Amino acid sequence: MEIYKLGEMEERFAELIWEHAPVRSGELVRLCEKAFSWKRTTTYTMLKRLCDRGLFANENGTVTALMSREDFRSARGEQFIRENFEDSLPLFVAAFARKRRLREEEVRMLKELIDAYEEEKP
Image (cartoon, rainbow, N blue to C red; front, side, top):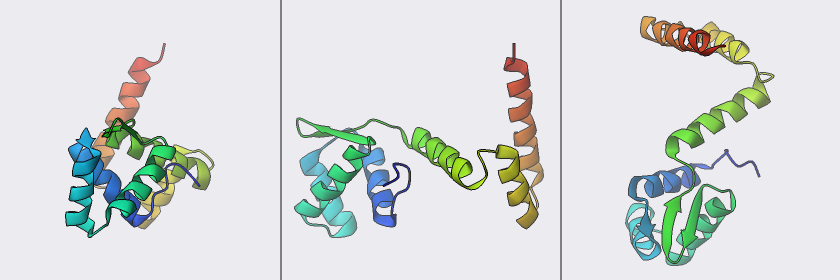
């Protein structure tokens, strides 16, 4: 099981936790019943799965995020590029740009990222 690959419901559940964290586990059960029509056992099963992956912790009845939404997305992107584009960001951007023309704003943002990187080099 790959840590940064989530199924649709795992992703929705994680988003719910990030929106409310820290959250008491009983409140999380109520939120999941309302949002997904889940029973208590389903919520705890899904929570254990995501805790085992190191995304969240459930200690003393309080669920906290061990990894922020932004850090998770960043790690998922890195994993995707590593697995599908030989760990090469330029290969990924080239493949992406072949299917869809980059907007001016996207080009500007990429240039700013590269410029910032160049400025940070010793």
